[in-house]
Length: 188
Ligand SMILES: [Ca+2]
Ligand SMILES: [Ca+2]
Image (cartoon, rainbow, N blue to C red; front, side, top):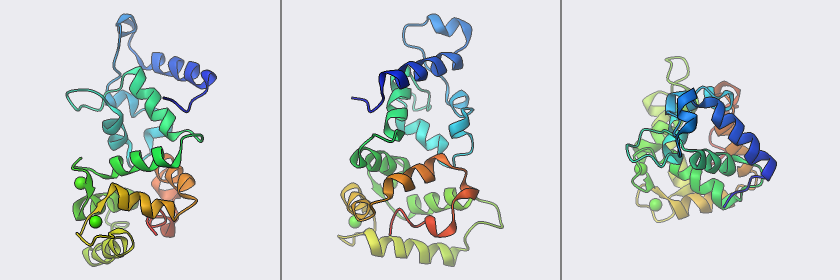
């Protein structure tokens, strides 16, 4: 299932083919390596770019390489017409850095570091980080087990009607253009 129009699929195919080396174009189901995907303008400055490739990659080696189908799934999830359920499902998977099906302290810490950048100037102190994660958990950890599962995450998202635009903001814009108060916007 895709949220893309026929025109968008044709365009996507052209861009995908451009990313392939000459002889790979004859391969029946070619894969574009992650480091080549990361050169796309839309992804280049995205703080979650590697996670995005890993989540959409069907590669058994978990190397983040994408087939054309994977590439279409990625574009489809980010398209304006994708449902909130699809977007929140993929946002959750992107934020679940260790792929264990729940957002724990370590995932939330990585998420915040991705958004603030990891330079000494922008990084939160460990006290600020502790406070921020505690606020996130207060707002979203309904069963109080110390982690955010998919249904808790989707519950928070459902209370945030502009999540779709926040999702695009987080995932498609360079981190320095995200206003500070928007960092938490997706949770609160
Ligand atoms: Ca996790
Ligand atoms: Ca929980």
